[in-house]
Length: 322
Length: 217
Image (cartoon, rainbow over all chains, first blue to last red):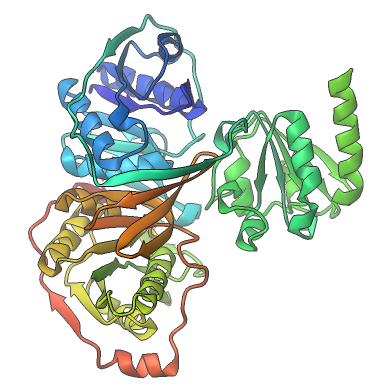
């Protein structure tokens, strides 16, 4: 079955999730004996587009048009519909993130394609097309079968992994037909530039209720700064409004898989672990030696965050300076 | 201006999820049913907007696709403050089917703003709002964390990587809302509960629609 993967970039650079989606799409195309087409929307340089070949993208369709500068759901839906029809795609793959949630359902109706969202791992079978998806906020998984001819999958981020399959990449610049204007207009953007995106970050410094209050986050931010890391938090912290909801990692928040994850003052409830278990190395700081986070951690420091943090920060600074 | 809030009837999020028949079926014995939390926040925001509109928002309607067993939950939405309710008398089979039913409700009622929660807390599909918008061919904005009406101009905030965007939207449109749209969901008071019994709850029969996804039996 021919596969179409929708990628995303951040200021012209592909997000980590794009490489994961291409790896996933490659595997699906291989297993079903179909071709793989990767779609890039936005202003991405040829050199960057070629990077997708590292993960198995033999063909990249690039759409760069001012009308798709920001995520206009109807415009994006139209582009994806046109490319999917042109490529006779039978499986269309998105990330299960905010862009995927915004666009995939519309594409589903356009192509009359059954939508399987929050999918984890490779399909259980291809004929019939059966996948496993997250349900009840990650408390269970359910197997679903997509019965329509065309199928749409939104993959749970960081749930599959990135695999290299270097191939030669052909790039096609495609002019999609678009309306002059759509029903939405972005009037202002409030974006922190120069910061690492949480789901893309290689290092994440995350803190929990053990920090006692939002006023104590300065050291967390400083540590993240020195490490070039993104900041994150546990659910109670975002529920209390100490930190923005966008920083919440866990079963109901963002699912991340950094190389290095610091859990500071986080007890490590199962819901939290569900969002970080893909991390390559977990370092936990907690005053309670019985805290479940230590079960998941590769390194653990038993002690008060307020005592350990300044020392850790000092040590990291020293290391960076040397 | 008329607002429609789409709602899903879901197990209480504190319910212990159990399965029966060799872990293949959801066991609904003893389950407390509630308004999907994101839909409840959407309803709360709709009511806030209506109260602040000085009469320009004439009504808030809630719509739910479900069998008669969903009516107590729909009545709760009326008790919180919705003016009337529509129940499409069908089992919510998959997102495509549900969205097709709600699209028909929107067409019949010509609503200006349609609010949907970003996902239901049971199947987490994040699909119905976007599908509904495509069925009726109107703009949609997803991950909406704020919705404001100022002199008839409707603007929303949505989350993007590393920040947020403000957008102006043309009506009619579908807002798919997430946390932040309202701070705390409203709790029905005694007067609301009494009044809810008298508010209209219209039952309509489903239109023909396909089911594209099947859950394992």
